[in-house]
Image 1 (tube, rainbow, N blue to C red):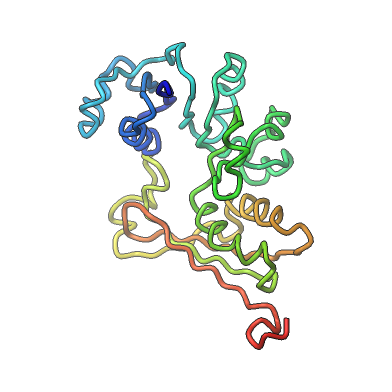
Image 2: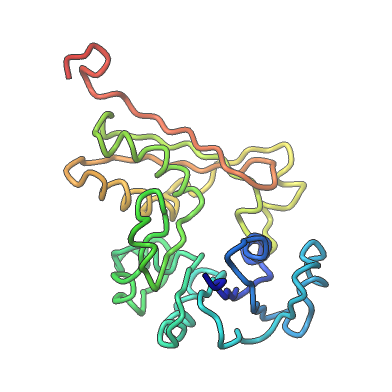
Length: 256
């Protein structure tokens, strides 16, 4: 089997650089081309010394011989490049949230823009292999799940599918600061994040509709009510999610 030729758009973010590390080590993948807007013309090894073995130059545009493109663009930016990549016959794995939600009307509320390509939302496959492995294998557009969404969905999917719990669910999640990306922000400065735990997005986090969407598919007749509160904790990476729900009546005494 010939190796898959992969490319990364926006390799210079945390997600893009980690993708480069993982793809370079993958035995069935050849990382062929990477792009970066602010670092075009530089060697990838000079920008990220730990990627010194890649021997890749950062370019303005991807090479044309790519089979699979990973778009690590910010939210709202992937929409501008993905349609043209699909027309070229490339498979696309989008790491942003631009194709995660099936309902286009959710985007103004959670991401602040009207989705310009609702037809692609129907085409995109939510890229959680534990739930959609067969669909992912044949998809041309895959929407990579959000970080909080991944942990919460995987924790709750078995009990929601079998309706082992009551519909009221609480998700308490704690994340490291790298989840905010490389862009500077006050809340992720060392002096702000160190020795501190901070709840945020108390009015509703943008990963909540993903969680609701995927869990409701597992049991459409199960009317879920989900409370989700994320927290920023002083560590670089990783997420701990604690999910709470009452067992459905009769399960413990065997009468259900």
